Image 1 (spheres, one colour):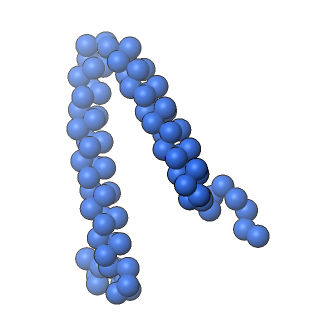
Image 2 (cartoon, helix red, strand yellow; image 1 turned 45 degrees about the horizontal axis):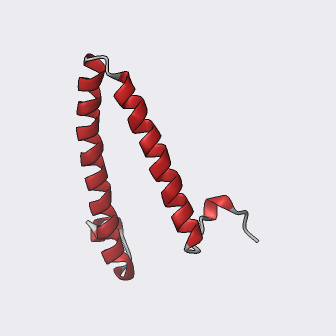
Length: 80
């Protein structure tokens, strides 16, 4: 697949890792949507709200840990 898309030889390993991660995320979200439908059918919106609170907390913790390690986001800062 990297040759088909014209990925330079130095980035083939990273490309494969990113594609694998994307496939895993799509698979996890697919299963999550099935479970979401089951919870909605049983009108368990409280569990959905708790999961959103947990997801927000994990996202903020990940963002804080990344910035604390010195990792930067290009989208956050204008180019100098």
